[in-house]
Length: 300
Image (cartoon, rainbow, N blue to C red; front, side, top):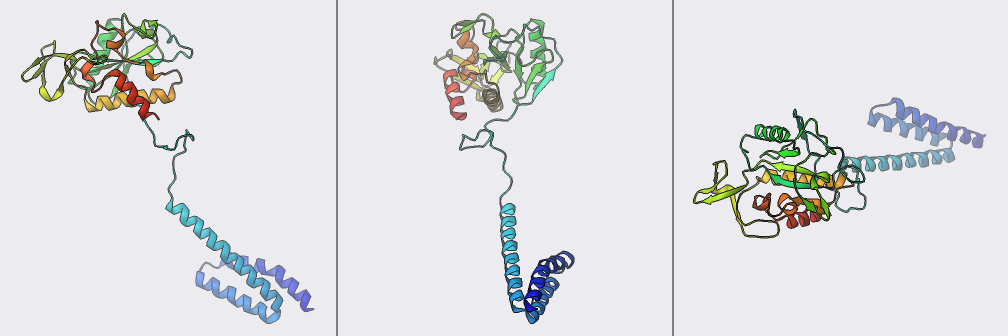
């Protein structure tokens, strides 16, 4: 009889305990009822009481494990998914640039002459024009280029990037003129262009430098360079820190999202048209070979 009673109590115990846990919200009251039930079972059948004790002990261990897991979840915030699991450093190396569209009609000439139709690289320019009106200067540059049958991306002094509404990212528009690089002529057919709003190469003076359109550039915004790599000796209007940061970010974005893009095709206009062009020259704080080396280091 006692053995049969013990079996019944063992079967009922998980049900009773579950009901107590489900319907009794107050923790102290819940513990009191569980202890009372345990004592009641003990008075009827010691073997069944032992099973109840083990059951409750298992429940406590499970609760402790659940609390530990919950604490760990609260301590460790969500992390972004690593899109490149081979990298130890998973911090993003770039931000997707917001490229602003300007209503301008640029004549295009099909897709880039690459396997994918996407650009193989980027030609870095300066506008050698008015620069100090932010978006207005950039939009004026885009429209002026379009009127001459030319087109490329344009960056204002804040680092914001603009494109003409009729030229998509993989559309050829002429911007490099007579040019060659690594055995390819007509670099516009392989590379995007980036015109950076900047006064360009200057006539040096005691107060800084004078642009060809007679705009005085303060001394703190001028950089004098000796002949080095692509740089033609002279005094230049410096790109702003925001422009250099935006340029690096844009190129890193292309390096990581455009399988066609090759950092060795990130070139200065003065590299692909030597003797004819001098941009970016000393407007950029480093020579183009140094820029390519820096990009490779940043992209590791």
